[in-house]
Amino acid sequence: MNTTDLFVELIIIGVGATIWAVLLVLSIFGYSWVPFDHLFALPSLLPILAITYILGIVTDRVADNLFDALWKSKLAQQFYAKDGDDYDDRRYIYLRSERLASLLEYGRSRLRICRGWVLNTACIVISLDLFILLQIPGRSTKISMLLFSNLFLALLIYGLWFSWQQLTLADYRKVKRQSAWLRSHTTEDG
Image (cartoon, rainbow, N blue to C red; front, side):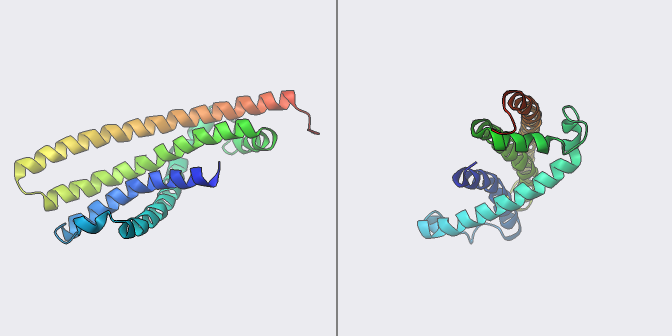
């Protein structure tokens, strides 16, 4: 994976984190103070991009640790005797086939984005609920917005988690098969 791909991936993850962080700030402080006319000017966008990138890094690390602790071992056991055995196969692919390694990284990028957005969407639910409860007038409007947004975001979380799970299983399957194929078609000398 090249640096540009990684940067874009972290920006995509960071956008979700920026959304919930902004919603949280607006929930607490309101939104009348926000300079909407200057918000999207180039001088404002550069710091926003930097913050988005940083939030993407943090979100990716937190989501990685959370998903590893909750689900990764169980998924890995479908292909490997113990968690971590896939690293030898993965290293072998990276050393022996740049093309197969690129394909694996493409899939891993998608699963990292899904994983990060599961966490982001859960945080968006909380911060959006707070925003609606604290900043939106009218009881019936609040109830309607809460019902619609929570249902939509719950479905999105499930879809993202399911996608992450399927991409993770596909990644393990590909690593296992591709490393076995490479080992059967290459010698240790090259």
